[in-house]
Image 1 (cartoon, rainbow, N blue to C red):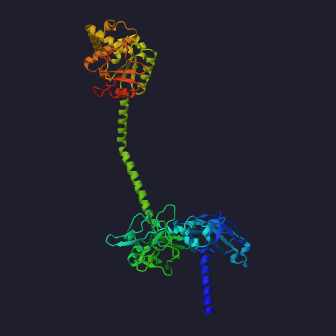
Image 2 (image 1 turned 90 degrees about the horizontal axis):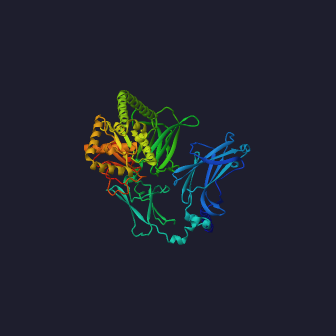
Image 3 (image 1 turned 180 degrees about the horizontal axis):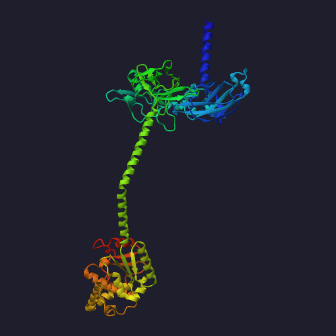
Length: 639
């Protein structure tokens, strides 16, 4: 009995030691990604790599979780990857592709370890222990209580890191930062919400209900995952459609306490409803198949099976026959899905890769999948000929459309050319028929006013108008005389759209008032002048140019201005003065004399007037389109 008791005591002590040593992770100083080699290997380098399918390579894989520390403090979880190299065929320079998958990442990360084997290590007396590689891997995604799968060629190793509580209960209490957040005092203040999942068959959904007694001032957070070690993705809805619920679906619920690490309530409530929900799993199974070639030259058929949960099933290649659903199994290729190669993808589903090697090339091969109560398939590679046919059809349609467009352009060429020519002629006619402008000086024209008039005339010419300025026509004024020259410019007022512009200054204002006053005093003489103007418009000569209101003028420009007043008076009688005459006022010069107490002279009333340069655009619009109504151009006189 004493021997038996002693034996059990030793066994218990040994078990306690084993458990304690498992929880006490080795602590290693870490500065950067550390890659070391044995004495039998040199030129060791590590760099980022990509996922490459290498069926076999002569290595033995060993992975251990460790703590990476900085001078014995601030420790974080790491992976220590050890590879025993078994060189073959006297190969010296080589490399190994090491990949690892963390469910939280949803993708594979690879490192290429390049090295050269020293020839002495290839001696027949040397053992494989003389050649090894050691990689210390630190990644932010590697955390406590996470599962990491390491792949090297066809070898793989699954490592589950211990939880924070397990690590903090060991000698690492004072060096791991997360242990401070899991102290017993803080644990007492933590509360975990409890919840339940109810299946509603009528609404075909699952409702998640949190216990109302678990009240907390913090907001409630929830996430959903597939399988115990799957990535938990945030879930905002409290209901889940029944068709997407699977037996491996789990939920995590916790109170969000900001920067504090919240304890979570984890539950997988559908594991007891396997028969009811297993159909949802198989309805969401998909298989992608690709034909390829191995390094040895043989043909292979690679496949990827994706499912919401890890499933127990068999896969095998088959040759598709004439019938759509008939596929004959290829003997000796059937494979059973392994539980330790599943990887989670970015959608939260689980992926199982596989390959059938040395298949017969040229056969119409597909893949079949058989579960416990269901059989799926055949899943076939995408027919490349179908893609070629679709792209050929797209190119053919494009060519047909191009030819049709060319034919339409050929037949419409004449019509389009005629439309373009008519539009061109219309635009040219519109620009060419902008009309003729006669710009008349005030009776007291001086240097500054004449300069502004020349600028106005040049601007109108640039806008496409034909412009005559009395300042530019001094030779014609001297040869013809002021009044004949003016009538020669205005003789086609109605037929050619000629407009006359008078520049309004103080002298012009006073001259217009004097002219009206003399008209009232010398009515009959003014009447004779107007009749003389009308005769001149009819082609008859004007007599008595020095008589009446035209006597005593100081310059030819003043004579032209007075003659223009007579024309305005005549146009007023005909009711079309505002259609042929405009007034402009340069804002740099005052228009209203200080002695004048009345408004605009009676002769100028009703004529469009524009103040320059502020109303330049309005003037151009008036000249281009003409008066648009009885009030156009007036109503805004400022003098």
